[in-house]
Image (cartoon, rainbow, N blue to C red; front, side, top):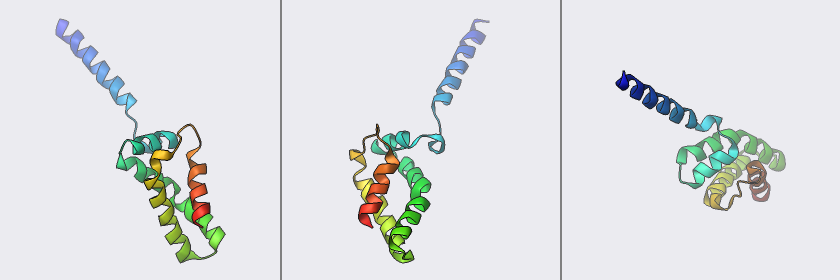
Length: 105
């Protein structure tokens, strides 16, 4: 019976640990940015997945040119990656990203 109690506690601890680990797809932008700042490449990939279409649409509205909008969108994410360490996670990440898009356009 003692062994069963130990196993139950170990199992409960493992379940608790698993609850604390959430996939990037359900993280907030701030959590993704923090993870990307720590070098977790998948987190930055999720940022790109989340914003690529939105940034492209925004840049296209500013430039009215598809190929240019594609190039600028890529430049936006390159610049964001290079300067990711400067992001203040207390502020809204999307505003920072859209400002880069606006400036690049």
